[in-house]
Image (cartoon, rainbow, N blue to C red; front, side):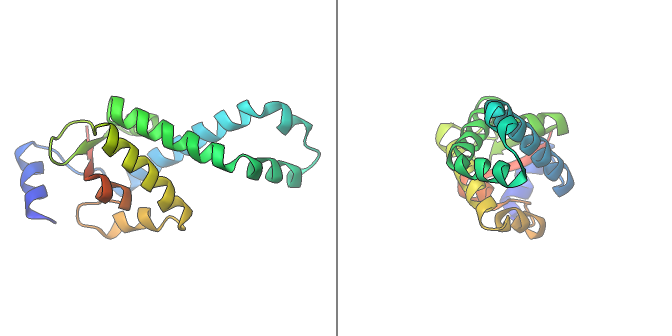
Length: 149
């Protein structure tokens, strides 16, 4: 692990969130956002005759869904230091330099690169499993860590 990060964590009595906690938080957030999408498009989904029509409907709104994910992640991480899934799992996103909630630009950077990581077969997320600081690509670009509360 990076000695500087290790020193900061030790000095502040913080520990990195485990990959399993982060995965559960991710799953909670995905379920929540999918539920919101279905609610927003309920009339269209209920009128769909089969699964193929539902898939086509979902594909028509993929840009809106990705935008919703970016706004959700950026807002909650900036405002609370955690998405709803992270709050449930009692983990928190902090900027390495300040040990505070990420600012607007860091939160937006993190949210955008999070979606990019998803689009590239979740490789950015897998990176965190093998990284000593457990930073996914979106953490690296935003200079953030995910720690236990």
